[in-house]
Length: 113
Length: 113
Image (tube, rainbow over all chains, first blue to last red; front, side):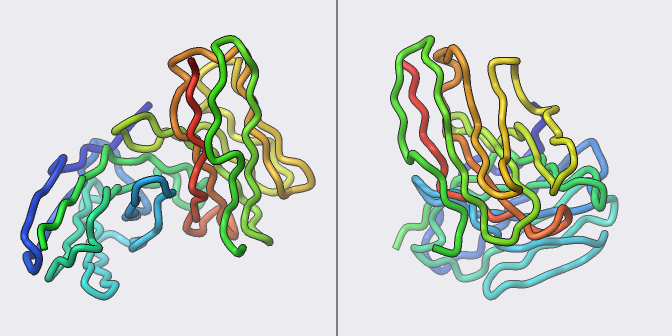
């Protein structure tokens, strides 16, 4: 099925470092979402973006909905060990019509204490 | 609990058998989704239910896959004549309305021998 291009594929960082990951698409999306998935669990919603250009923060997390509607980034500041997991971006092509999400391939984040 | 509940958490079965996976959405959520996550991959949309409307089945990979949602609540995903390529984690999500953020269960890990 269709997937978004997400990068980097994996990141290995030291505790306290800042992290940045992004998603791009050839299609325009009306909604961008960022999820975190821990092993053996379902994805948990971190941030939802609904307007082009929107910049939203959730604690140490900041995400932006690209002006072109074809990309989004997620930043994590001052990383801690519990940030370890797989981060997925997701986009909704149809906006108000349906809520059928297209997911990125994921970014594996490892944090060294 | 208050979250999306899926059962069983793990299922191992022989090739050719039929399997049923169950999802209990968050109470009051009108929209329900099924996704498939293969090893190391993002989530792949399968099917979407919204209220009493006809489901969006556009993501089902073959006619061996089907799903029902009874009484606007519990959903069952059925895979007939399972194949080894069906091995994956099957995730269910629900949202309050068709435009709301999706909340995921922890999934059913399906292994076909």
